[in-house]
Image 1 (tube, rainbow, N blue to C red):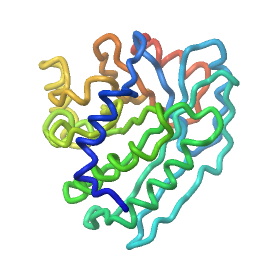
Image 2 (image 1 turned 30 degrees about the vertical axis):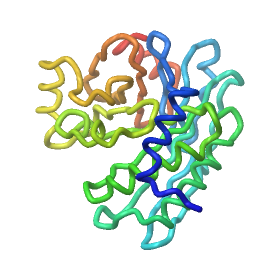
Image 3 (image 1 turned 90 degrees about the vertical axis):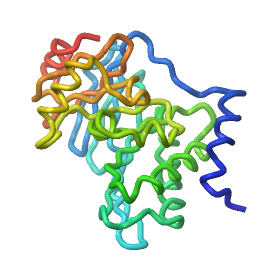
Image 4 (image 1 turned 135 degrees about the vertical axis):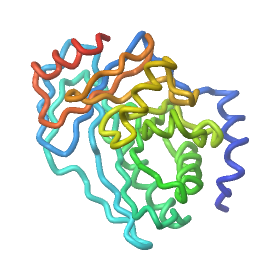
Length: 248
């Protein structure tokens, strides 16, 4: 029997009370996003830096889920901790139905079982009409992942400053990563408010931040995970420049 997602919130709370999987970052953990391009990140050997690589893109096409798995090689040092990122793309006018959620969850769980993957991150710019379905997907995914595997999600920065839905939904994720880059017309206002208020208004958005190497850096409070996005293949030089903007 499939459990309705509305029932999962109290169930997840009970599970968490007995065996918490919430991840507490050490002072400040740095992750490099490795998108769909050839990436040789073996220069990270000896650095306590994680790699969040795009494992696949799931495109919701009507009732179908079309998967585009990673095709470009990713080279990392043996000890590098990996986060499998699954990107979801959908027509913003189309809600996420139950059959789609089931298939998407299966694909994400498969990505979580890849070698050296220590956590999973879901990247989905859900439209307002898709938020309920997205929350259901995350609740069902939480109960489907291997025990103890952290679950991360990216978030539009506006969700974390001008919107309360993430806090109100009580999403069962271990971290929310607000993306403070490529924010469009409202970006200047958001940066100004973030600077004046010192933090995101949504409490769920206070464990991590996503930054881009080509934009002004928001220096988050200590202890916050930092994910860096680069618009070209990473090199040792671009890595050093990122660390110089926001030291670990």
